[in-house]
Image (cartoon, rainbow, N blue to C red):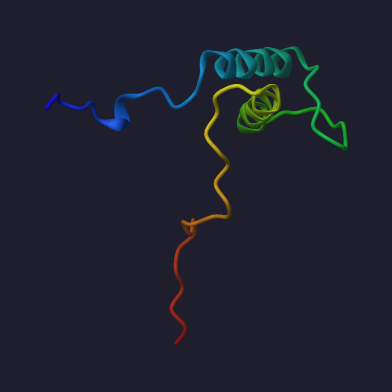
Length: 81
């Protein structure tokens, strides 16, 4: 039997996807990146990355599927007394 590689070592995103994100980041820096329907100027780095990945998905690049819903709770838990 041949030894199998661990799945964590593989690339999750294709090269085409990284090119799209790179392009989106440049457009954000330049000030020409606009968000979806509203067409407002994007200021957030995270939003620029999300737009780049979305464009890559539409073009058929290798991008993992979006996570459905949030699984982790971000804030502190409050105890009711």
